[in-house]
Image 1 (cartoon, rainbow, N blue to C red):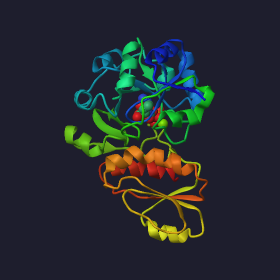
Image 2 (image 1 turned 120 degrees about the horizontal axis):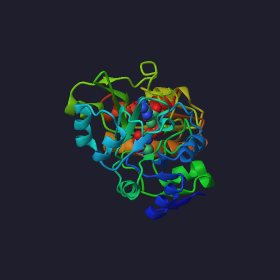
Image 3 (image 1 turned 90 degrees about the vertical axis):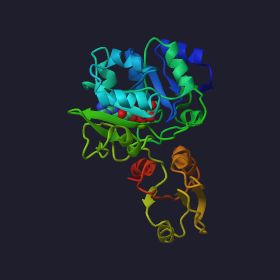
Length: 318
Ligand code: TXA
Ligand code: MG
């Protein structure tokens, strides 16, 4: 087992010594290292088994820090940072040369975010460097939303998981880039497209790999359980088609009752998308443990956070 602890001082000490620490954020847990330590950054890619061409997000603790790492801040980016930071919004901006190429996979841009979690903000303030952190899961697996998920993935290979409880948002941040000055969503996430448009107006979405070969990591299969998982519109019909199998069901608010269902998880009895989102990954982790033949997930309404949730379910079921 890795060491699950709430000791921020110890986490800081490990990070100063080029070690990795899993950190809590409001979205998912991150696998963090000093952006200026080549050995730490290499360890992140190795431990995650992540290809080196897939760049990392740099985590900072204040908007002022942006100037040190980013060459140009478009007006809309300033507006977004002022409104959503600390929070679940990542911005891809032109980098300064101080940001190591290993972190950005050689790109001229860097992804930056100020996470909204008191433990990690306190940790970042202790440190004289920002933290590069991808989600703390092996490449292609479901992102962790509690310390125990991280421990289950990496065990003793990781020195410490800094425990900050369950992630409040539960899916990854929304990523926005600026192409010729136009804001573009590269990854739907835990701030809805509508909420962002409310602040800066209509925005292009290039969330699919086909449209965004340039946003690495947007692999079509991702966030996947080991158990075969499908995403359907008509749950009852699908259950009938799989009668006789050991089925797990995952629904937004619908109650399912059928003898083939071994485990039914309803993500929000109150039909609250934000509650459903916060429970999504833990539910997939849980259903994956029951040795089921198939997990049948029901499509969410294509609105607000429902779109982000559908995106993750689609990637989990490819
Ligand atoms: O909520 C989150 O964003 C979490 C927490 C830990 O902050 N982090 C996270 O990191 O989801 P990761 O590495 O799993 O996903 C980051 C995504 C990848 O798809 C990567 O390709 C993209 O961000 N990315 C990073 N730098 C980029 C850049 N310069 N241009 C385009 N995409 C970039
Ligand atoms: Mg990830």
